[in-house]
Length: 495
Image 1 (cartoon, rainbow, N blue to C red):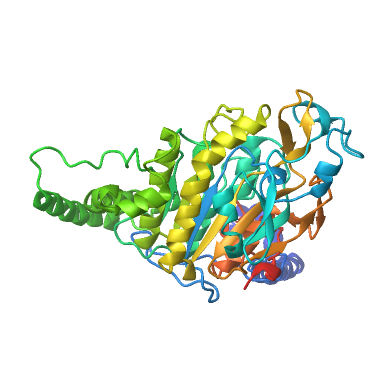
Image 2: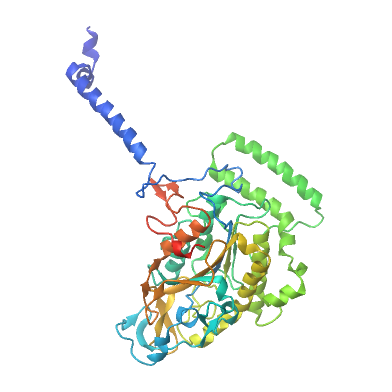
């Protein structure tokens, strides 16, 4: 039998000279196109090549170099869930007093929670502060006294007026869940200089988690090692207490043995990032058994510090929050890269009782939150400044959106305002006694230099020496970023 008869029809077509040349030409062209596309895939729409930090999964917290040199090496994020009213705190609008009690011109008749009422002047008087003469309200007198150290951003705006989505957007750049938080991005990029503490710590409010829960400090699709470790002065990390009859020497020998066994196990499964992250987490927990008890012992702080922060005065919630503020400073002193300090809680909402969400009785509810937050937060910033920590630490005070210049239909509260709100920066790399952007004459919409949350996060990354357009993680076929495909650095606030 002729061997050619055993070849299929398709096989014979491949052996045909004309078809062979056609197929070969298309194949070579396809290879060339693939090479060109591969070259293009290393750049983003911005034209910049992505920078995916190179780290050892076995040692994910080792410090890494930033993209460029900037003064800020660590970050303290002070987050106030519930939406602090900018027009009652830091954004002075005389027209609110001028038009008090009148219907707001050109503003919506219905907002997030229903019909809008009349314009309301600030519930607290504003006064000039410091050499800059910055006008801030008597609601937060201790923070107001530090206005010369702050860089205010008055034209922030966001994409949503719902709290969970607002918290997600502020911290992750997306309204949906499942994306990495700012702290996760920062520690993914930079690691940590602390060997026996987490790179990223979330200090939750004494009352519990904020509305979006752990998504505010989650790792999303980044390796699990970069999620925030949450605890506070009242509730230390779980499962770290040494059993009765178990000595420190026993602890050390056990940790060494586990390290050896884990190392042997990792050798069998190289490249398994989840396994490596879990092992790294367990090893860090072992180290924390030795370091955290000392870190949590606030009795070692002098009486003057406790008095300055307010751990011995005011409401019980204020005392606990003040202890959280001292803990935040101690963590940063020990080299923790990102500390996220929460002032407010409650996944189910709280209407101004457990957070700043003051839809009714704003005069009472905002005053209650301010009593908890003002003195301890101001003391924390002053203490860090006195110790020289602001030379390499960036402070970010923020909330998810603002509140309306007019009252709600109930006549006692202000509704959500995503179109204008105020946050401030302080410390390393930031201008002092400076205000950027403006809302309109009523504080209703961003009017001068509107600033998106993308811009805000891009600027914070820049102050850490990170290019927000290049810091990325390849996930599901996309180069993902904290700022998605948006954002511009606000160079005017950089010192």
